[in-house]
Structure formats: C-alpha cells, structure tokens
Amino acid sequence: MTSATDKNASTVDAIVVGAGFAGLYMTHRLRGLGLSVRTIEAGSGVGGTWYWNRYPGARCDTESMQYSFSFSPELQQEWHWPEKFSAQPDILKYANHVADRFDLRRNITFNTLVTSAVYDEGDDRWAIRTNTGEDIRARFCIMATGCLSNARVPDFKGLSDFKGTTYHTGHWPHEGVDFTGKRVAVIGTGSSGIQSIPEIAKQAAHVTVFQRTPNYSIPARNHPMTPDHEQLWKSDYDARREMQRQSRTGIVNNLNDVSAMAVSDADRQNQYTSRWATGGTTFMASFNDLVTNKESNDTAAEFVRQRIAELVRDPDVAARLTPRDYPIGTKRICADTHYFETFNRDNVTLVDIREAPIEELVTGGIVAGGKTYNVDSIVFATGFDALTGALLKVDIKGRGGESLRVKWEAGPRAYLGLATAGFPNLFMITGPGSPSVLSNMIVSIEQHVDWLTDCIGHMRARQLHVIEPTREAEDAWVEHVNRAANRTLYPRAASWYMGANIPGKPRVFMPYIGGVGRYRQECADIAAKDYEGFRLAPSSRAGAFQAAD
Image (tube, rainbow, N blue to C red; front, side, top):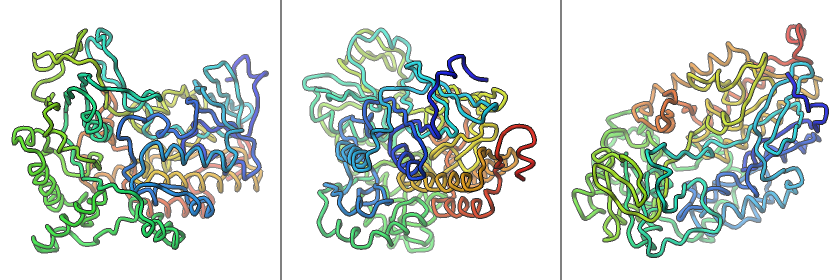
C-alpha cells in the first residue's frame, strides 16, 4: 500500500531513524558504501540519550576510555575525556565532535519525527511519513531509535491538577533548572533518580524521595582522568578493544573467573571490599557466577546491604533503602556519588510507596498513604518503555499491511535483535533479542552497524534487493534468548528488562544475556553461512525468494 503523496516523495537508498551514537555511525558507514542516506532526528541536535538526559548528575556508568567509538584510530587517539566516568555534557560534546569530524550533519534532518513506515511490496521500498508531512521512500529502513528513549510518566490520578512544575529526567530542559529554595519531590530510585537526588538535595530547600523499589548501587569513585590511565588505553587500544568485543558485557572489567563459593569467606570478602573501593558496576565481575548462582549472588547482595547499613545513619531509613526481594544485578545495578549518604541530610525525606502508595496528585503536591506532601516541583525519575517503546511509537507496517504493534502484542519477536519476519529490509540497531542494555552500548552499536553494512554490501554485490528473516529462524532465536535468560537469575526481578515497569506490557525478558562475545560469533557464523536464517532475493514479488534460494 502506498500513500497518495508517494509520487511526490523523495527517494534515497536508506533512511536512518535517530541521530544518537547508533544513527551517527550507521550514517557514516552507509555513506562509505556510496549509498544516499537520510537521517531523521526528533531533537534539534545529535547525541540521542545524551541529548535528552540532561538531569543533574547525569553520567555514564561505563568508564570513559571504554565508552567511545573504536572505528577511527585517529578519533580515539585525539579525544580527551576529562573524568573516569564522563558527565552528560562531555558525552554530548563528544557526539557533536563525531558529527562534525565526519561531516554527518548534512545527512540529518532535525526537529522531525517519523510517524509511519509502510512497506510497499510493489517496488520493495519503505514509504516513510514524517510529522512535517514529508514522504520519503527508501530501500532500507534502519531504526536507530535507542533502547531507553521513550520516557514514561505514570498515569497518576490528578496529574493535570498539580500546579507546580514537573520534569522527567529523560526530557530535561536544556537551560537547566534552579531548585534553590524549592520543595522538590523525586519519584523513582532507578539510575536517573540515584544520580540526580544527591545533586538536587544540595540545592533544594527540601527533597522528598518516593521509592517503590530500593536499588543496589555501588559508589562510582569518579575522579579526574589521569594521564597514566589515559595513556594505558591509548598505547594499546587495538588489543583492549578486541578484549571488549570478546567479553561478556563489552567492558574490560577484570572478571574474577571463579565461583564465589569456590573461595574462603575471607577471600570472598576481600574481593568485594576491593571492588567496592575501586568503584563502579564492575563490582558484578567480582566472581563469574553472580548472575547464575543464587548462593553466590546472596553473598554479594549481603555485602552491599551491610555497606548501606553503614552509610545511612537512621536504621529505619537504611532498612527501607535496602533491597531484599530480588538478586543483585537482576535489576540494573547503579553507580552513584554519595547516594545513600544523601539520606543523612536534614532536608531529605524518604517515602516508601509500597507501604504508603501514591494515591493522587493535588494542586499543591502528592498524597501518599493518606498524607499530603506539599511540593513546588515534581521530578519523574520513572524511566522508559525500554527496548520496544520507541520502535512501537512509529506506525510500522510490513508485508500485507501487518502491524509491528500487533505482531509484538505478546512480546517482541526478532531474529538476532536485528530484523523481524514479515518486515523486509527493516533493521533495528541493538533491538530486543540482542545484548543491547546488558552491554556497553557503543560496543554493541558498532557490532550491529558493521554487520549490517557488510550485509548490505553483500546484497549489492549479488544484485539482491530484499532481505528478511524466516519465521522459523526468528522463532528459534526467540527460544534461544528465553533459554539463555532462564539459566540466570534475571527473571526473578520485576525489572524494565522484563517490561515490568509498563502496565499491560508482556513480561518477556527482552535482551540477550548470552554475552557480547558469544553474540558476535553467532552473527559472524550466520553471515559466513550466506546469512543463514534470512531470505535474500532480487525482489519480494512471488517466486523471487525461491529463485534466490
């Protein structure tokens, strides 16, 4: 099916949706193939996650020297990161540097949303419509929309009645916010809440934190980048990048490759103490079975619980801040700067909304557990409709008008997290069914983009125009992803990995937990077997696939 305005549509080889790190690199690689590319970006600038998430304390929890592109030796040598863990402004500065250095802006249309993408079987192209009314036709449609980009505000009763100011950490005002003298409510204690609460508390008259689920968090121990550490990486970047690519998480974290139960109590405690002192989420690499062995996991969880009890002076507050009903690491583990200590401040109050649920918002504040908390501002640190939310905001229709929203009603189904049956030439960067959010995102982005670039180059060399996964390959991969997840402790937590933060969303473990290195090898093997599990053809019309097979 095509729209009435298709005859006026511009035509390109590929359209890329999103100009975050995935969209930028995809644009660069497609141009390198000599393809015509249009990149459509909702924001007024590049950077994706780091363009939108400007809340106080926003910072990457992967070390700076590892959270960067590896495709250009010159780029990785010339760029200087000022801190061990980079703050949002520095990462955004890096994204802009990449866009300028590789002259990518000339392909990007800013302040524009893709509203629909419909596959036209008549000429094997995607008909894309934007919110500006523009129609674009493209052979390939590549969704680089990000895993954490569809911000979620819970549908609280009385939300529109509140007369103060409201903010979501995922859509923070670019001019910043001055909370001086304000009474501020922060709803949510996931990563953005844990990072922003200490910073807001330094400024506000009072901060009331509404917590549903306490979170495990490790001190980041952030500090200025040292010349020695920078040179350690830059002098051996090729080898270290390869270590990242072959690792489980895409991070060189000095994994202690033994079980927590294979060492003495004293040695185990020393390992945890050392990792805690070093800081950062590599705490979970203390032993090799913390996400697969409940007994081992319990030892790590109890270590962190004891640290919380030491950091928070009020035993009752410490108890409410202490996670006890899910294994450590099965919800996103956080890295913080004085998060738990912030609850020792006189101007910070913790409200446990499992004990005292939020009932409604009123003109002057929040009613929880029958008590009204008067506030001037509300910060929603309530996360995202992860992995699928941004994809399903676009009205995507494949063969025969099949809707992606309908196909994924019971949970996302994709082959390798890259493509989905019934939707030819549609690709997803770090989609559900790939390591994505369980990995260093830039490592996973580069792997997906490189694989897709090689695939499109292969198709051009053989004069093939259409690629699509088979239903059988897709089903087998979804089953493989589920089996991998069920061999771990991850499904024991009601996490956004499972879609548990979105009412009505199917409870399916969405990322692939088999590891970055293993996944990379799986993808390479599939490509080496002439893209096993995909059907490639010169046309999508009847008989073409059989001829290509």
